[in-house]
Image (cartoon, rainbow, N blue to C red; front, side):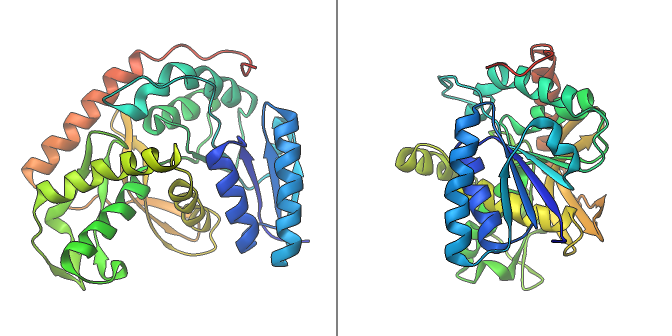
Length: 301
């Protein structure tokens, strides 16, 4: 069996949705599921095997260990430690203290890994930076701003009363309260369209809360963003994804164009206001990173 091999670390809500998506579209030849709870990984694999048979997917699914990830072309980090998020603002940052040690420990075990790493664990901009700095891996991307951008294009399309695929636009900066919609360069069918910034921003902020109130945690949206990005990083298709990558001395979301699996930044022209908002996000993330706990040598159980 030939084709890319993908590893997924974490068998919680996002990991399950992502794994099901990978199997259903048979994006990878093999899928390796890793979880600190062995029984959870085995149970998910059994469930996915049943699904693969029903949908006639060619993807081979297996439970593995961290060491098995080195044989993967791409690894998706969707782990989440057990904690209660009591944050009422900057909600995605609520897991920073709990998730950072596990991210750092995993990164230590994958030092020198040569494939692509997609970090989903929140706060994603901080966790992607932590993973890259500890692991030394060259191809690390944070998943977050591409989900924000998808939501943005959907909301903008509804305002403009057009199909979402006719809208071109980005959300950059932090995957969180300091996300920056690039209204000045958003177009419909290649033409600028004016939309009320307040309405769009409010819709972006309300959408995650709507999802959490209904099903407890976002899962399908992030999984879709990962699937779209995997196609780009594996070189299966070319295109643009808004991903958390180095921006000066911080990590935050900017558009990245992939050609044959190779990424180059494509930051759009920004107005003075948009640039100030991006700098504000960078400053906040810079400060937040200094407050992360130091990496640990092992993954907490």
